[in-house]
Length: 113
Image (cartoon, one colour):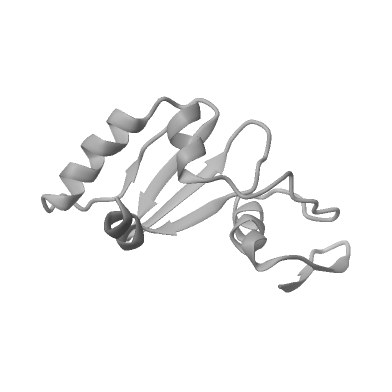
């Protein structure tokens, strides 16, 4: 992905792997600076979120509600890693150390689990 960021003070281009595109968007949308964007490792996985936050039971309970027709948007929360569901998309992000954000189409998660 090629990206050019323009702010009041400057403009800078950078290139990065497509897998970081959601992290760049998340960074921009939450007001973080991207002047020297360097991803901190690989994008988070759903499994890392579930393990770190001991959230398997919470996630499964939410998944059952979803599958039973309660499809509202929800913040699944967490202390370090966080997850939010919005309009069919599950977003997994890090609120402490800045590990790269990842995004899942929930219909793909349903079909694999």
